[in-house]
Amino acid sequence: MKKGFCFVAMSLILAGCGEESKTVSYETNVVSEDSSSSLQESSSSSEPLSSSEAVASSSSSSEGISYGELLDSRNHKTYKTVVIGKGESAQEWMAENLNIKEVNQYGFCYENQPYYCDLYGMLYPWETAKKMCPEGWRLPSKEDFEQLTKNMGNSFTEGTRLRSKEGWPHKDGTDNFGFNALPAGYKLASDDFRNLREGAYFWTSSQTEDGQPLSFSLIDMFDAESVSINDRRYALSIRCLKDK
Image 1 (spheres, one colour):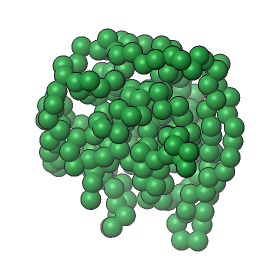
Image 2 (cartoon, rainbow, N blue to C red):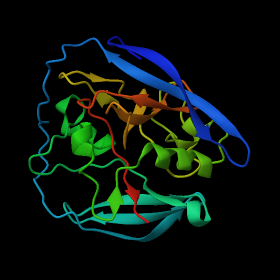
Image 3 (cartoon, rainbow, N blue to C red):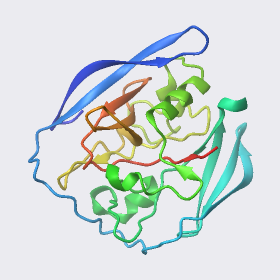
């Protein structure tokens, strides 16, 4: 991590396939910035919208991966979706980061430049993130991300296999399952933005016993993924998961 963070590592066990299990990093982000910093709205020109209806349909496949489509009628934007896993444990994920801003909701483009929203989607504080997925889709929990790693085989290389094939300066991913995680970075509670092209940070709906929200992260230098405790005022990416 860049200046402004220190990590306090604990252990988090994710269940493996069969009798296997694995340990990944469970981190607490300690912020050195002024805790009184407030969120400010992005300069994005996205139009306010109200409806949350969404329609999913099938689409074409690419390199052996079969994509679907999610039509978000709030702004008529179409997102790729992808099914990862088989049978009852299969999950349908958005294969792109959410990129929509609604009335009275905070959302940010990296460095407040709409160009970055076009590339990477918007960044959202946690309280906003919980409200932003379209109807029939939801913000995934920590357990949903754990199931994702199980569906991929728990090989300790999920980070590499979820990352996009380009855009990561040190080590591009292989994107084996079509998740296409992009290094969108994040926003601090202040006006500072960090780690563009170095990490993908996704909010979960889960929180610790004392109410601190959890995120799922993929870092440029590492093959595995991590689950971290974050300040709810941080703005991270969103990947919605289809309700069953």
